[in-house]
Amino acid sequence: MSEHPSKRKRIIHMSSVHRDRDVRIFLKECRSLATLFPDFEVHLVLAGVEDRCEENVHIHSVPKETGSRLKRMWTTVNHIYRKAKELDGDIYHLHDPELMRIALKLKRKGKIVIYDAHEDLPRQIMGKSYVPMKKIVASVMERIENVICARLSGIITATPHIARRFEKINTHTIDINNFPLENEIEILGESTLKKENMVCFIGGISPIRGTKELVDAMSLTNSKLALAGEIPSDFKAQLSESEGWKNVEELGFIDREKSMRIKQKSIAGMVTFLPYPNHINAQPNKIFEYMAAGLPVIGSNFPMWRELLVDNHCGMCVDPTNPKEIAEAINFLINNPNEAEKMGSNGKKLVSQTYNWNAEEVKLYRFYQSLMG
Image (tube, rainbow, N blue to C red):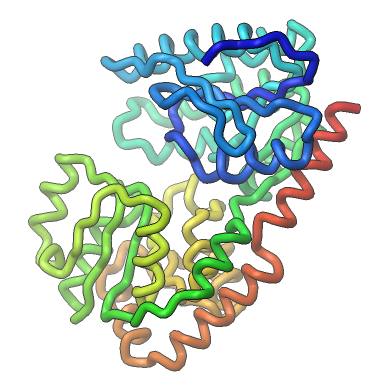
């Protein structure tokens, strides 16, 4: 994409790892900012995508490196930084922990620099099976993150829990939650698709997300599991050995339109993440997307999730390590369709009134305004 001199100020979002048209980065934050700040150009720098302008967001691609994880991280971030300098923005909004090493470089150039913490990084590291000496690595990364983030212009987090951690080191901190977009709620509300004897899980698939226990649970039900997402080959081999795999419809990665159809046909949405530190205080976007679809949610029995799902009577909470308990919850909703419908209706009402992107968009706008002074 060729660059042209412009007097308009520029907001530059950057990610070295996220997909093209990422829900939080592009569909929510970038599109909102392009509408809320018409006097600014909004740019998005990603790796291995198509250069274009979409919905007033200028999307730039840098080479997507292959090879070892470390090489990918280091080289791709260097490409991102060179493109960031070339664009000469006024505000830089960083979406990945590995971009922190260029954050202070941009800050020293007099730029407004925002770090968007999608996850609680130290707690996330504790849940990574491939990380050696996890406690030491998590502790070191927390110190690095704290030192850098204390010096940045502002911090945005995906949940109030993560925000409470950063508020201690940077007073310009706010939580911008991953609540559903208004058009998701409207589109899902128009469904005429008939419900099937099926539950669904749509998103990243991994051992720590409780996929093995969920598949095992399917052997104890007469329903199907629509499993949408990319499955690592070694993990798929493990899942396919489960007795419950015969009741799994493996869909692979699906687009948002197909995702909506799956939710419309399902009896419940599954979010049975295992009790790792980064999960217990998380607010997965899929919970609210299931609720927006009018689906009861079967979630893990974490206190914050129980407060959301059980107290509001829009879902059930189970021990995510217990396939029998997961199956019992699925069977209950199948055998009690009226109760399931009430839960789904309650969840949809909550999303339409409270848990939606409109309110978060206002917070994002005010936060940007405060940093611009």
